Length: 261
Image (cartoon, rainbow, N blue to C red):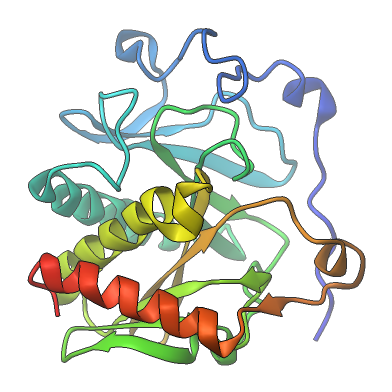
């Protein structure tokens, strides 16, 4: 298989991008909805639009604004809003995937200062790649591991073969009719990462979405400074069995409290 070439960053555009993850008092362009342009779809405060700052060459960069609340997040939305958000995300994703111009479509979310994002207002990114197959380095083993919960609608596990490590949660549904389950489980996991995982020391995570055969997969990754093993050698890490069991029991209890287990 031909190896992907790196994405090319336009540094001049990148330097002009707004930022308020580090400098919290900087203006938020997503709060000023009246000034938003190139809107592709909307449903009240859910807005899909083209990214004004297209920093990557040969790509189509778009953004899905999740909420009008600057301090909102999947971890703290009402269940009704979270269900509505996931339905909106899926509709945008499906529409983007119909565009044959792109070799692959990537859907992901950055949250927190270590997640790789520049704006703290809650949003996802939906990006079309014209030349790269964004999934060429991903395989089915990256979504298998220690099962935390499983029923006819959804499976939740911790990766035994993570992409980066050390704790990667995989949420897998087999049909769009189970999308509300995916929304609920994702909310539980993101809330766990922010409030409980390592005593709440981590405030950053990523969501990565995948279509594989008939499955929809959301990989939830707590973010921290990348280890030199991965940065220099592409060697992932996993938690030992004791730690994995701790995480499994803690998440099972949270699911039980929500009536999801």
